[in-house]
Length: 193
Image (cartoon, rainbow, N blue to C red; front, side):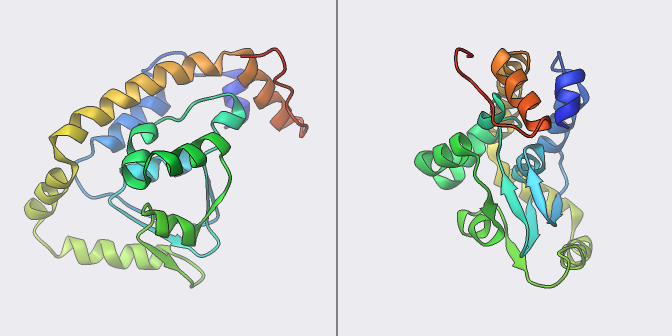
C-alpha cells in the first residue's frame, strides 16, 4: 500500500512483508495462484514463489519498483533473470510497464491463461487433482525442482533486496515518487537519488 509506505514504512527485515516473503519462498508444499485483474509489486513478486500460476485473460502484471524510487523485492531480481534472461528482466524491472497475461505465459511465469470469467475454479481443480496424489512425492519433487542453490540463494536475495528496499523507501526519490502517485502528478526526480 503506497500510503503505508509513506506513513509507516517497514524499517527492519522483521516487518510483516519480509516475513511473508521469506515464508512463501521457503514453503514446502505446492503454492497455486489464481490471478484476476492487476498484480502490482508484491502481487507479482509473490508469483515467483508459486509452483503453479493461472491467470485470467484480463490480468496484468506490473513491477513498478524503479518508478516508485524503490528496488525489486522477494528475490525477483534473482528469479526473473533466471527465467527470462538478463536483458528481458532488465527491461521488465527498469521500466515497470504492464505485462499482459498472454505475455506472462510466454515469459514463463504464468502456466495457463484462462479465458473464462475466473481463473479460480481452474486453480482449485488443479489443487484438488494434486491432493489426490502422494503428498510425500509432491513435496519432495518441489524440493528437487527448487534445488539446493535456490533454497539458499532465494532467502539470501530476499534479505539483500530487503535492506536496499528499506533504504530506498526512506530516500527522497521514493518519497517524491510515492507522494506524486497519491497526488496523481508526475514525479520530479531532479536532484534526487
